[in-house]
Length: 325
Image (cartoon, rainbow, N blue to C red):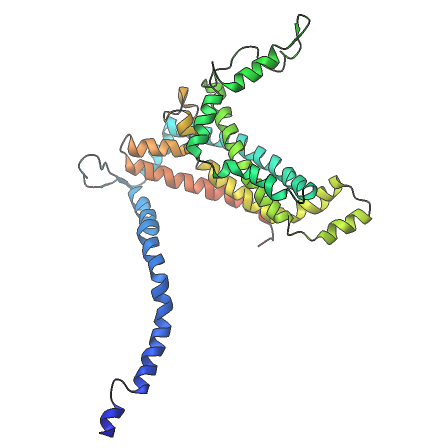
């Protein structure tokens, strides 16, 4: 009887064995759902997109079989005039909206950090509201504001341009005297850039403000004792110590602006505007895939855009990354 009890599966030795096994396996069981979901909705679409970029495939034609074409999709995309136009538009909008974002956000964050104490959270919350507001709502509102005949922006500009002292329009050299048609190709990219700038300047302000709050106050106090004014503190203390955050913020701006889709799509009504002046690379990829049903070329465009973003991120790392890692 004693020998049977010693070999029983309910013996203490067996229980400790399965307990140790359970302790080792349990962490993997808990993280397994994440890897399953990531594999299905993240990794698989990524790898399938890369595979698809080397094939010709039209799902609209009854899920026809894929046809291997090698790098033909890439060469076709690079030689396509509309793709070249969309890349040009993307870079222009990225520069016109991205540079002002940081040029305004950085000094604004410094001003809020040094000038507001009790009301700081309220002020930064006001600037942050555009970032969390619906992109569709923002684009529709600004489309109305930029309306040629009824838009408030034209009313303000023409009122300033027609402001007279006596019979002389004193500000006509600076402001227009007639309504501007913002839908014209000459103004489309400026309109989209302004909307993107307005939406993301608060986000960058929050990033820089969070970094400013990590700078020790002792450094500023020592600088004040040495006679440094606020401008000198900003130039010689704030900017060098914000370099890691500047690298992070600029990287996000590069990624976001080169993937710009919602604002130009809604503002131009999904067409890219007159002469495709507002069509971005992401819009061109969407139209190629879901309007023209050329998923192979659309996948190739997505990977070309990825390589451009990766290259610009590496350049940004050389300029701002330095030895901050």
